[in-house]
Length: 124
Image 1 (cartoon, rainbow, N blue to C red):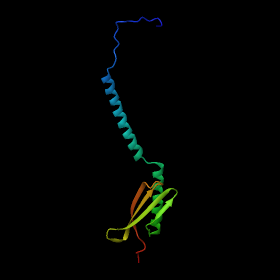
Image 2: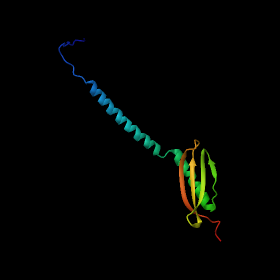
Image 3: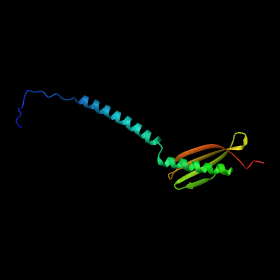
Image 4: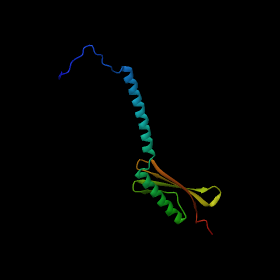
């Protein structure tokens, strides 16, 4: 015993089983809440894929605005597929709403962009 005395009548104070279970439940609940917060932050943060998709959408929108006549089509840039929808803006024949939606390789929506543009093809 490395030079120590052994006290036979000494009571060692310890935690009860109920205290241990309650503390484990509290730890599990706090860990679960932390994981939910981490997952939401990771999911909603701007990833490089989302930033690149936004850049591609801005480029396509800029090109369509310069051309003045956008056509609903599907374009693939690298691994991003961009679906383009054109619809008239309310009761204005010269205005159109262009909606660009970017999809990744798994066909999950990565980014979306909407803008009202002027159609040059109806000008006199």
